[in-house]
Each structure stands twice: as structure tokens, then as C-alpha cells.
Image (cartoon, rainbow over all chains, first blue to last red; front, side, top):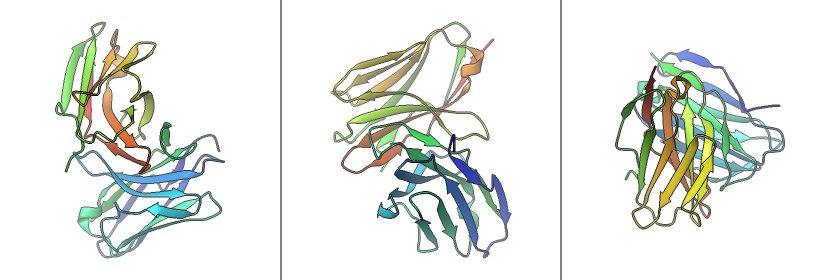
Length: 114
Length: 112
């Protein structure tokens, strides 16, 4: 597609439920990043994909968080048993290739855990 | 450990004047720096970048300066326009890690 697309744009969920966030990166871009921004905070790195593998998942805050990527395209970030501290805007970024180039961001998914 | 710091959470500037946004970093391994602009309810959009082999990069009204010895970079916007009002994030990356590290952002308000 023309840009990075994320869905849903907004998600309200009850504490303890699982959520799936989706990212459609720019076609042909091999690298993909997930970040999140909690209220009043900067962008926090979660995970980086090169192709379908994740060489760096050091930013995932707990084992409740997981992500996968298939077909060197769509990525899904899953949060199990959501907690209120998971509330944030989750952003997906798709550089043309990893590092040293601008990363194009999607509009984000605003997750609210109530 | 905050490796990229933007110490000014907000900045107000009169239209037509210069806006200077500052960013400090601690990791001397960073070799590429970027500035992003973010409007509410939108993802960050790339603005301008600079490699560590340069000390200045200019693109229209936007100029980024890099002072490696001070581990400091700044974004200059001249002249500032009301449409520039947004949150500005600086980011740094060490190509060996492929991880962009972002600052906490500076909210710029350009007053008409």
C-alpha cells in the first residue's frame, strides 16, 4: 500500500482480555518495528522484525506481549491478559530497510484498558 | 537509562521567528539521527535526518545541527509557521543494533 496502515485505530478492552493489533507495512519494506507511547512518555521500542524473524524483541515488557510477522508483510502484536498499564498508543514503523533510513509510521492504535 | 533526552517538554515561538529544539544523547555509538513531527491522533512523520559524519543538514526551513563532541543535536525551523505546531521527537540509532531510540518529545506551539 501507499503507507503504513494499522488497525484498529482505537481499541477499548476490559482488563484481563486479550487484544490483537495489526500492522500492514509499506509493500516491499523488509524491516518492521513496533513502538508504543504511553501518556506523557516518549516512543518506547518494543520489537524489530527483519523479514519474518525478530532479531530484537528486547523491548517487549513482559511475556504477555508477543508479535509475529508473516509473508514479510503483515505483523500482529498480541497482548494477553491486558493490564491498565498497557494503555498506550501502539505504533508500527516500516523503513525501507533496517537502520539509517527514515522509518514511516502508521497512525497508531490507541489501546485503552478499563 | 534515557539515552536520548529532550529536556524541554514545550516551547512557544512567535510566527516568523526561529524555533530551536534541542536533543542530547549519551551513547557515542549512535551514528544516525532523525527528527520526527507528530500531530495529535497521527503517527510521527519523518522530518529530517543527519549522519554522524556531518555536522549540518538543511532542507528548506528545517536545519539539523550535530555536535558530536557535546553529544547534542538541534533542529532549527526558520521561519516558524503556525502549521509547525506539533510534538517533535528526536531519534538516534546505532546501525549495529537497528533500534531507533526516541526522546520524550518537545511540544512546539507557534503563535500567530
